[in-house]
Image (cartoon, rainbow, N blue to C red; front, side):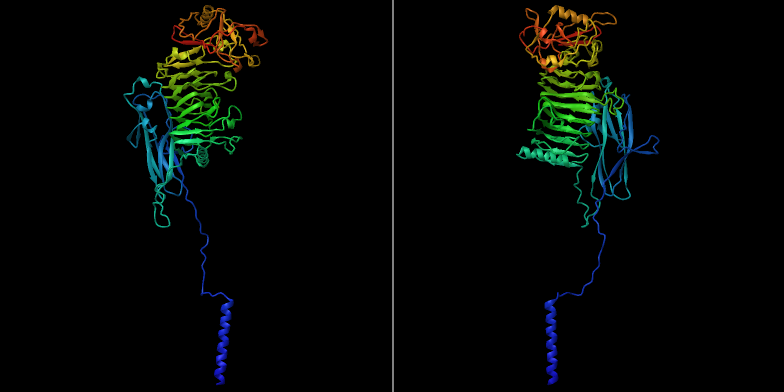
Length: 613
């Protein structure tokens, strides 16, 4: 009995100890552990390169970043053809889909309609089709052993192309785009997760809040990588002043800094800014400032930031603007621009295209000297000053410009079609431009040219200066052109119009003219052919409301405060040092102060001369 009691007591003690252990510790199963170290999540790489087969077909050249054109021949004729074989290489770790395209296509005389394009010996149509965005070739290169694919491209001029295409040209860039494509399986065994992958593309959708729309467009530009297309839906995008610093300044509204950006609207996409300002800090002058190369603007309406300044300023090379509307303010170019295409746009009110010292072929250091500048199929309406030309911030005598092709444009109610203020460079008009419904021939165009360089060119330098051609017919400046010049038909002295003297005067001032007959006779004498002494066959095509009162006064058409004078007849008044003394040229305002006097004469050799005052 005693033994049994002792056994029960020990059992009770054991039980209590177990309970105590349970209350004071954590219950656990038997366990063991294995650590799988160094797990990584690593993004695959997408990288493609474009190569060109050499002339011996045994070597290849990487042209991914090359500036050397593949197709470069300047003696095309009907039946001529040239070709190249390209290789697309997948240098990354992912499978890719790609497209080979032509971009920045610039042509004249519609030569794109007679150049056939063959890809791998299959006729894909004319070059015109690829100007609309069609691709030359599309393919896929999977990750693994297949890392390259070859494409043969041939261009051929149609055999029945006629003489209309003589002197025409076409230029373009070759663009290779790539995106990921379905091949690699994900963790669930599917390879369809990226089948809808797009080439670089951003969509911006408008709301009812134009201020938020403007911010969204700015955000899209900040996000965009090189080669991105930004689609902007219809609506109003009111841009605020930005905060990012570009070229040492902040406050830019819409700076484009990535190469290859395309911004496409739908025709009702309005870009504007209420932060309007005129001349001032560079960053606060423009609506759109293009710093990058290979930028395209399409189907946009760009409204004024300030009528006295630039809506769009282009600093980068190879720029295209198509089917846009510019309302007040200029599209401005300066410097090396490579190929420029401005096509199918509308420029309204006080708006114009300005080309200052662009692609100057005389400056050998400029890589894009002689680049093709084409202004075609645009409409210019109600341009207060001029539609196309130069403005220049420095002496025009030091600035030059590559020739500009002007084809198929419509000019309606413009003060001047053209303004030419630089030392060299010719605007080459074809015979398809019109002015107020009339065919714009050489005689008519000469009446609408404003060529008023600042001082620095002598009468001899001005004489016979080639400004424009129309269908090959030359338009040149007459001898005595600068108002303030010491009557260039008697000597070659350059007369400097002094800003200090003239800025205080107003357009209400009029200047003394000799007489209608005397002045025109003097002009005829000034336009003699100095080499043969042959007097010009004069055809006075236009005397725009030449106003001579009883006392011989001619109203001056522009404000003296502008600092340059181009539109009035003068006799030499008393001088004040090196300047004209405006107060000594006494006359009374006679009738219309907006009178513009243009005299156009045609030489017996067909050359058209103009003098505009």
